[in-house]
Image (cartoon, rainbow, N blue to C red; front, side, top):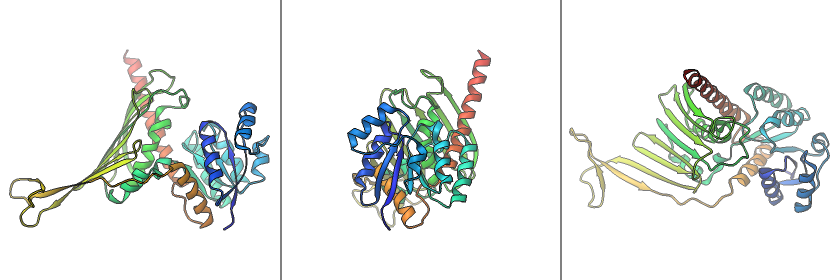
Length: 334
């Protein structure tokens, strides 16, 4: 397939990263230009990268095959709907939209247009998670911590939509079951929306996920732990490391260097195996943009589809509602 003509909407911090990587992916994409409503930003970015900036979204849409939407969440729906109505494939940063209703509308527009939509849940492409995926099989308890030092960027939305949604998408991708029950609490400390939140998700198959997210921590942390029958898998998304602890039944006598787990009561002894596979150095954003191209070129389902983006947003919004309900209750009690 020939190269795809692509444009970028939004040239902020993340937008500039996407522009740089798309320029590097010159074997797949023909970078046409970008649009940003802030004139000073447009001029500076155009000069820094030596690229063309457009005066309107509409003018850029007309000249491309696909759009990379890296704008604030509040404008996602407007940008995406305009692109889809013109039959353009879109890559759209997470969260998919500001509301579940907007997400449903985009799904309908995408179906009508018959185009590909990929959502930027970049942790799916994190090399540590990629290495861990083959080991994750029917997890029954999941614990995640996503902690970040304070940064005003992103405080226009609750921490659930800013940070926790990354882990929600990862969890939903490995738990093959519907959501049964959600409970959550959180508190606004420095902004007008919750800065710390904790959620517990119970799935129909019995799996339980406990998620914590904070954007006012002293240090950064992005860790997930997956527990399943005879195995524990730990993924450090920040350090890009993973490790696996597995147990297997010992046949005969254990070896002299075996770490043995004795269950007692006449049950077979188990051998504990530790493994820490090496993780390749991969740029996750570059990988997801490459996969977007492959989905279009090969007419396949995107790795993170619009339906996946909807599912993560839907659960995130339920968590936000639970947090708000609990906040109201606390205020009333005071």
